[in-house]
Image 1 (cartoon, each protein chain N blue to C red):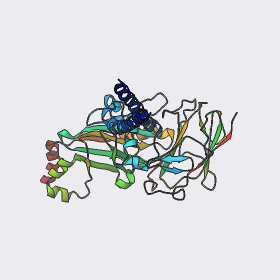
Image 2: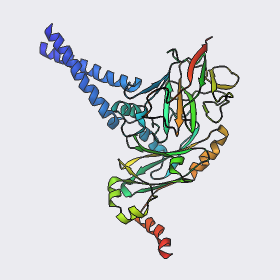
Image 3: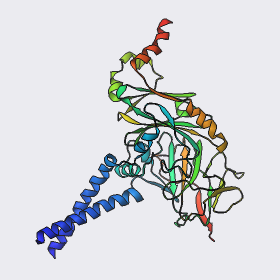
Image 4: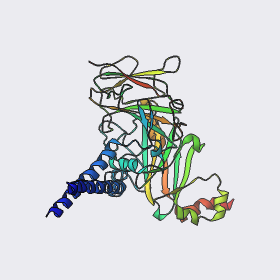
Length: 192
Length: 195
């Protein structure tokens, strides 16, 4: 009887531990093969056949089609430069320069990767439509209410993520440090 | 006490095995992956435009709204596929995915270096069956080997401003993706033979 009980207990623990860790790693992601520059994180290996099993399971589970290495690379940010979660009710400033790339796009998504509805139908900025300073740098205001200049509306949602995609760029699996790929900073400048 | 510790250890160890097996098996058992989601929306061995990314579009997560998208869902069992994608004004790229949504090849307009991205997609076996002289003479012919018989080709054209979206969609509409049967290959070759 005791043997039966411990076997059952062991099997229950196995199921919880096994399925739980799989669920965690495929929803939250792992640190495996990530490239982190400031608040931005990319997975350069996701764009080719050398993808790790965890990323593979994650994209299958989420129904994603990852961007190919010959096409570009995607950086995602969930927190600002001070590790604070991005809040759609606050004013957030994304400013600076981007690494060499023919085009880039900066897009705002909710936690599930969906675009956020707003009256302007403005979901992203491309490198071509952005208003720049005379030195080539730029600033994008992310806020729920209208701002002058480059304004990306949040729709007032609590949590959002930013995705910066570089197209036709040398940034990829060979990139190691922020010096190779200077990315814009993210700062929360004010909260109501 | 020792028995309890042993039970816990055995449980955690077994859990590790369950974890590894489930991570590796997930691609085989998942039904909500991109290929399955796109199957009802796309034609086989033909180009199907995808609806534009907007808040109501739950097709795939993290779609880039600056791009017009089209998909060719392919099956190479009836022969290789010929793909032609005219280059749009801003930026065009073509990415190849296996049945399990892994990118195995991606090319953009600049690396293609032409006004039309032209590719032949085939399985490794079909590539090996190609007559050797054909392989040599067609130096500028780009041949891609697909690791799986079925898969997806994703064509993307950038609209750098929202007003240019219609133009990007139109440029993708002119692309083609079709099975290259022996008959059509002969028809292609016929005018050259007459010359």
